[in-house]
Length: 90
Image 1: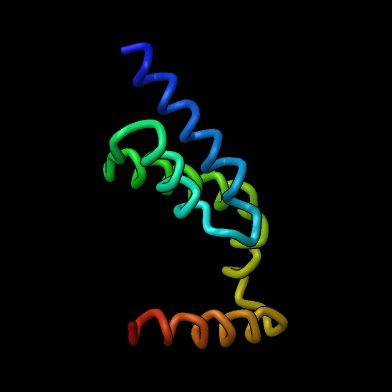
Image 2: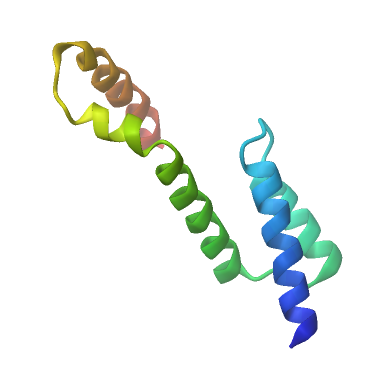
């Protein structure tokens, strides 16, 4: 039990340390997981959801300002829609 908690903490620290860097946090998470334990997909999903929640909390003011629907924000919506197109096609 203690070993599993320690492994989880190490993987959480790896995810947190590499999330905001311009490198693949998932790649580092997978690499470390293979080195110290058997990979657990559910845990990876949980870590990524936690990272997403942290990012949303961090930029919550910017997200809120997008929904004010002022004329200056129109370009942001256009860029967001353009950015969604490749993901939707994939």
